[in-house]
Length: 212
Image (cartoon, rainbow, N blue to C red; front, side, top):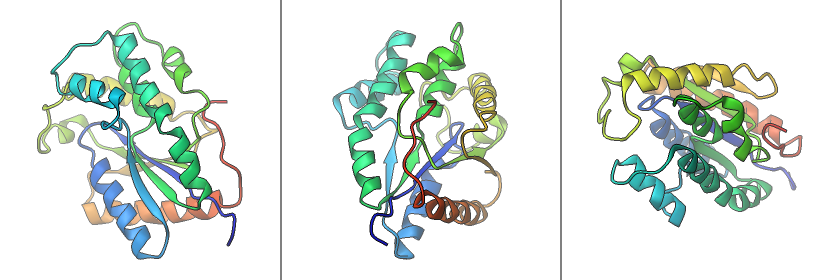
């Protein structure tokens, strides 16, 4: 149908919950089914801001906590023109992390309120579906390569999870919790079904703005 916009679908969760794997599988499955779908990541590490963030995450450089939070937000805003263009063309976008990670990870640090953390992202395109891959930190830490990047510490990930749980209380957003300890295939099937529902629903309404 002409004019049908794509859906904005976000995968969130603690580190090593399987977001990247599930994002790729979802895009492949949607394309195989005849839909137009693409995968985007936050942070997008190829831009100048993204390169700064990549160096920081890999523990190669240091940045002040407020500054790094604003850089993560700026990196998301860099992608907004592309996001809006793709959605208007009928392409469904699957995001590997989004503003909720930015808020939860900074909110897990000392002396940061979630309200302050949300402000730079107010007005970003609002997701049609947020899939939270729920995984206990003890399971996440047992998965391959855990600990390679800055925030991959069990105690910190526990605080991140608490921040995510606070964000999920927002009933204006379409959060769905997925048990990420299940098999990759079972998780994929659940995600795919929820995503196809969200795509159908998104086609009927305009794109919203986050936290407005």
